[in-house]
Image 1 (spheres, rainbow, N blue to C red):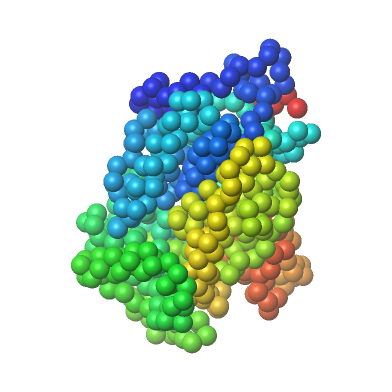
Image 2 (cartoon, one colour):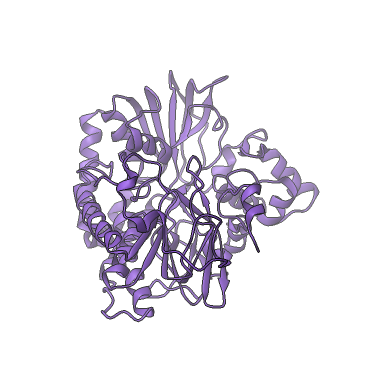
Length: 510
């Protein structure tokens, strides 16, 4: 179903699955679909690719569904089409050769399995809802924006492995809705997908190691990076040496990024946040403030002029909406994110459903890959395939490192204090912080779900993906507490996991 150049060279199993009997209720008009796959994998990033290839390695037929135009996800984002193998450096990260080797290996195995008919790849396809059926699950599909509507409307599977990844976590601040203010991940996605730099003079701000590859990537693209503003205190990593020593590759990667920062002479400011973005019709300047020991912005403000790009990232928010649709148990992770609870085999408490990657806790591409292998093997074993399960040693070490990372780079405890009443919190519905405060004061709204119903926060195009975490935390802060699982589920649960048109809904037979 790809319209990329050369797509006709793909195996027929990608765009035209095996026909079914006439009149089968699973079939979409003109596009036959199989009755049921043993395993469906949602997402073709590091976790999804690993899960699909591992299950197929054990002889299990897999349908791999991905919203992107080519496998790889956000981390291994490709510039080419699905018919061409990735090249060295495909990960888009400095010093990411190991990741590139792993991607090429997975890509090669995926091509072999597709040619043999063991993997059916549906690229440019989003899953907007998943429901249970008597013999498994039905995944309801819609073409990703800009993709042709020539694929099946739904597929059936006996087992599901969810590897949906995550999205940039954003915190509102005055001026964050100005053109020129972008999510750090979005800035990097432009660099990876097309080599496009989003500006010429940039500030990178937020918290976490991800700020470094974004800054170095911009500098290598010719952008003048005026500063990287890290809200945390990286020297605190000294308290987490056992976690770092357990994953030495992370230290090597970090050293490479620091070398890139030094090579490009990028200023690095710790315990510093962007308090305000300035400009009329577009970004022109930013105001920086140091944080005190409690995470509150100090009155001291430094203004940086002639800025046309502000890349902001506060970590990532896992995509868990499909698992929540099925009623899977969840928990709050170390970084305050809502994640899916899984057992030692990546299995949820919903029979037949596994989750791997960022959906179980943000931890990076290597961890996602390891969890994907385990989930794919476990799903294959459940389908009757032979072979043991991978050991969890690597997963345990990387999870320990991820927990340390979250503790060393937390969201500032009092970030809500830099908001003004006219600061937009939900950009889709134009809900301000003052409107949330008014709802809390006058209507005695005490939880995120009630705030959503009263103010329409999180009800726009993004369905709370951008503002949901902030809205949950802001509502809880008004109650004098931290956001809990109920707050995060109140905005994170969605009946539609992706935008779907009324025309598509009208075509459904059920």
